[in-house]
Length: 352
Image (cartoon, rainbow, N blue to C red; front, side, top):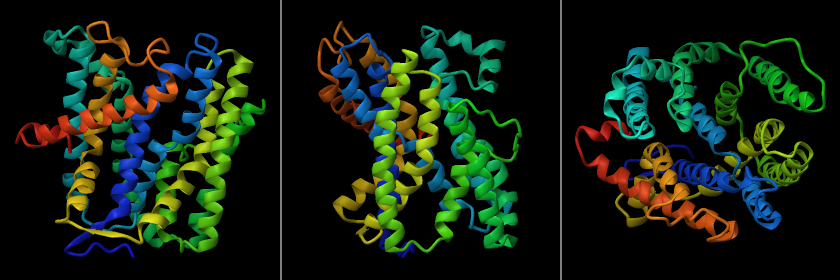
């Protein structure tokens, strides 16, 4: 059941958000190791690679969840934009200003330059803010897409999904093998595809067979990501380029199937809003966007060290220990900061 009663909320939605934000933080933590092929001991690189294989799903899952929750909902466009855009545009502008000052040696006056405005519009302020630009783009198309889907048949939905699969992930796979597709499909992007998949999952009756198949594909995706990363990195002697294409391809099976699996497991449970566990899960679930926005700044200090102390170094701790440890610390510290900001009337708007 997907209904939220007066006294209970959907546990699985918050669980997906929490799992995804932990994975986002973990990816940014393990990047401190996996990018350094031949520069750190191979055992440490492999530890990072194995973690990497398990956590390459969060952004697609966030997009799938957005599509699941938004695309079959009918509401006035003005209501939709008034509810949604303030929760994205305000944080984007605010955190762009914060991170711009942060990376410009705390020079507040640098905000009053044409360069800041140019970088803001070009999505070049800080690496993680790109996700807010993606969300804005998807929100802009959502009202139109809703109207199209109301009149779309099951065949129409499958037709677009097949087009997307061929022109995006399959074409990317062929590109890895040296075959380039010269036919552009302008209505197909990675982000839009995952957003659309959320709608497809919402409209699909999830049987036990689908859950079992999803479980198998999750395992296969993890194994392919781990082995493929090792092969492509070793072949090119670096972690860039084709490796990221591999992540995109495996996420097409991994992310939707993991979404289905988590939903199947946790949709059986509900928690009372007033219970201790319900309050905690609800609080973390509502803080995921804030954690996403806050954690890179904290990670910067951990990577570069504070008072000469660096946690993310093979000289200090093995990645086997440091990746989960630092991930946990970052999530907890970011969560605490977000809770504090949410208590301040003006600042709570930047951590929706």
